[in-house]
Image (tube, rainbow, N blue to C red; front, side, top):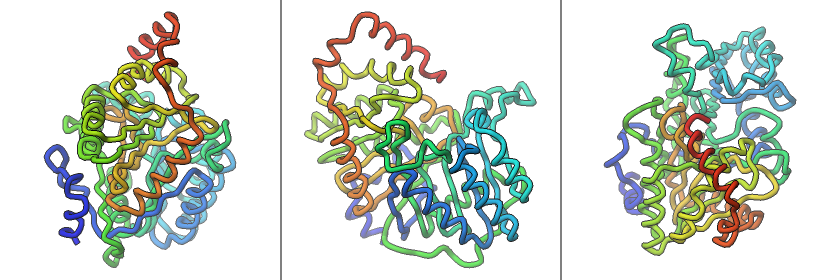
Length: 387
């Protein structure tokens, strides 16, 4: 199987800048578009849990969707499953309390990550680092990662201008077991390990999934190197969809070199953002990118929240990390590089639809920015690492 994967994806598979752990084989993966597809699949998986469920979310609201998940998790806890939920203190600062009260009463173990008032001065850095991963694992046999949090604003078909457009990948096989072990390390200090699977993880198609989930401030820079690895090895196209695009020069230079090789490099960015100052900062890059042949599209209708990329109908990246300083260095993130042609083609087809619901940014648009707009862009970019 590894030899077969090497023949198909060998030019994408560079270990030089990336750790050797986190590689899984014989997986089954499925792309889920928006909450309209992702939430039913997640809730169905939770309902079948027999041993344990782990959830890690940046945002977990007490609205309709949040209460559906809270009730499903509470029901599994009442039936004897070990259910653990980690949520970020900042992400859930205004998310309400009803969902947590319901789960706590049912015996769900709750863990608030990186509280705003750390109890030790030496842990101050945790107050600026966020738990930004979005993970659900069920019995070590099925797992979900992507950019979707738990809340009404992520539900729907990705066309409502008041809601988010995003993706999730459902994983079965050794990849799901790896996600379970990743979550086990998150909760181990608080409650000890979860029950281990009695049987080895099921094995499926020859699909390789390579995970990266570095600790904040890790010197290895594995997330940025994963994206650079994808860009530098693309031969036909590389399309990147990202909600908060504030890359470093290494990423931009990799894209420019790809264009010079004849690669179709496209960026799908939001026309409007839930954090407008980030969009202002992103626009500071537009002139430089367009001048070097990189195509930029801004998604209309729904608010783009995706963190995904695809290259050559062969390899895709999916996860929680934005292409900004927080995603690269400060937050706790998880991304997966998925070596699977059907999955890559599914993501490509979704992005084609997104391009159809976008407008291309051209140099004439950028040259119309006023002096005041340019000043705002520079100021936004200067403070962007703090956002």
